[in-house]
Length: 137
Image (cartoon, rainbow, N blue to C red; front, side, top):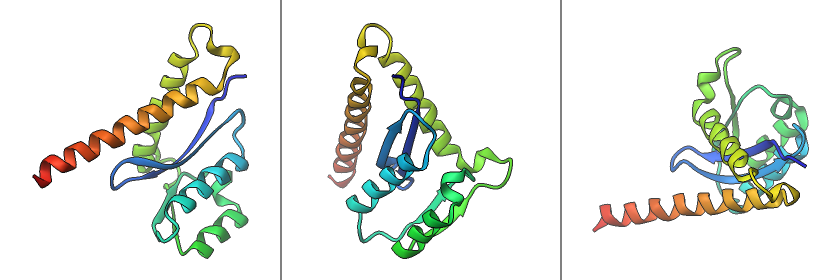
């Protein structure tokens, strides 16, 4: 089972994922899972929520959830993927990491690449904290 549809909610301020799900299908359930993780991690945040114009984000139930949480929704312009550039770049990196992780004998264990991605995120986060401490000192 190759999981090929990563869904991430990304904090553009510090460029760190705050919610994610990886699914075998391009579906609303994975978007919902990532959204719920982000809300759980930052329940008092009222951010601008930017996305592409995918069906997952244009559905009335999802838009109502954003409103209920006090978020403002923003979407990329039609035919202008550069609006979503930071996320497009991140998705490309994640897909490349998964391809590399799935080489060899671990195809029988599809969860292994997810753990590698989580470790990568943790390394990014630790590096940012270390850099911030240098600036403060």
